[in-house]
Amino acid sequence: DAKTTQPTSMDCAEGRAANLPCNHSTISGNEYVYWYRQIHSQGPQYIIHGLKNNETNEMASLIITEDRKSSTLILPHATLRDTAVYYCIVRVSGSARQLTFGSGTQLTVLP
Amino acid sequence: GAGVSQSPSNKVTEKGKDVELRCDPISGHTALYWYRQRLGQGLEFLIYFQGNSAPDKSGLPSDRFSAERTGESVSTLTIQRTQQEDSAVYLCASSLGYREAEAFFGQGTRLTVV
Image: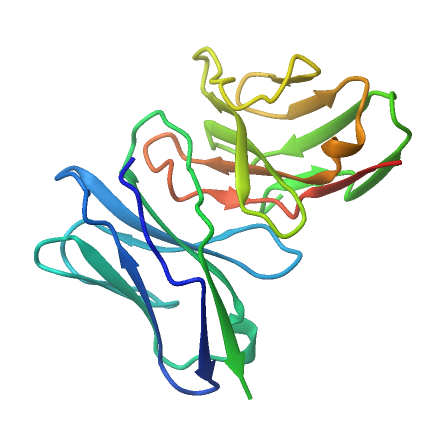
């Protein structure tokens, strides 16, 4: 799996958009970008994934650069409950390999 | 059930005792994972089951750790002769075989070895 780099921590004001970056400069053509988050004392939660097109679901939007070397997870209207560690993972979808989580970004939504 | 269920939610055991942790995956999910998360640290992969294939045990830290899965249902993680460094939250996740990275996690079992 390609290595990812994320900032250690970020703050965001409640109600504003939270933009979480991820660098994955060694990503391969068949590798997807996945985002998970882990709220304190809970198990990780799948958020969204994409290959090269931008994706949106009820939780977030994922913007992938044209060269696919970086991506941004966008929470359009952050709430206090979005405070969590956000993990960016790059891997081949459908492969028989385990998920691997790095250290992630601690997002703190401030009131 | 609707989600991945793990039991017990908390377990306190004495050093040297054996413990067994249980995971009930989402019905129909062929892939099942066990992870360990020590306080303030990231997730550490332990073992992976996919259908009837041989499990990927490459993450098990020692021979004191073992896991079983019956078909595509319940899995148990067993830790023998527990040590204090085994104290952690043990997380189980499951996913559809063709959408493995869209994994659903349980709430975990918090194991404390005293």
